[in-house]
Amino acid sequence: MKTIVKLAAAAALLAATAGFASAQTVKVGFSPEAYPPFWAADASGKWGGWEVEIIDAICTEAKLTCELTPIPWDGLIPALTTKKIDAIMNSMSITDERKKTIDFTDKYYNTPTAVIGPKGESFTADPAGMKGKIIGVQVSTTHSAYVKKHFTEAAEIKEYQTQDEANQDLAAGRIDATQADAIALDAFLKSEAGMACCDLKGNVAEDLEILGPGVGAGLRKEDAELKVKLNAAIKAIRDNGKYGEITKKYFDFDVYGG
Image (cartoon, rainbow, N blue to C red; front, side, top):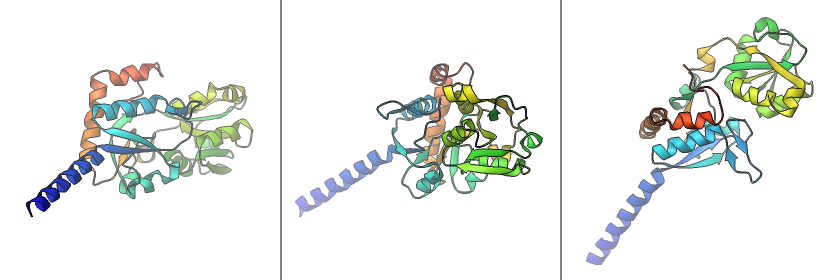
């Protein structure tokens, strides 16, 4: 009987330990698409970029083992709520609409939203400038919601699975403009295809309801402990200089925003 009790106790301890270890491994969901300088894959398929390095710094500071887990963009929130992943860290803006379903950490960056279009065409990044134009945006993004609200006089709003597809159609002349994060679009404009075809038309007007106050890590509402850990880590890497150290490798300004 004592042997059985000891074995049961050992099994219980092992299960508890395994549960604790498991709780410290966080599956971080991201859409496996190029979004330089935030995300880019090398020849071997390994992901790098500013956001990848920031994720690593946050997880290291929080003493969490984080596993990057590829999920198509429009499947990220469903994957989080069904516990296929534990967090979303993929340039996802904090918005009231998303907060109906999931929670967010504090922001870890905030940059402007821009519109680009063909060189030689003069128009502005506002409703008057977008009138009669075909605008490309990535599906299920704040940019899609924004153009549907503000650019209602557009000839057509065309949605794509990835921003790269929208950029390609713009370069090919199949659409007149695309809207996305200003830094991501700047990276495209510096590429061979972008330099050949397009330029910046301007930043859109702020709309906090749609665009939100910045980008944070998406979490399940019940994961309060993980939120506390990640918030503390975000603050710590800002305070100890690690955030600035990473940022200087990619930008000549602080992408954290005001």
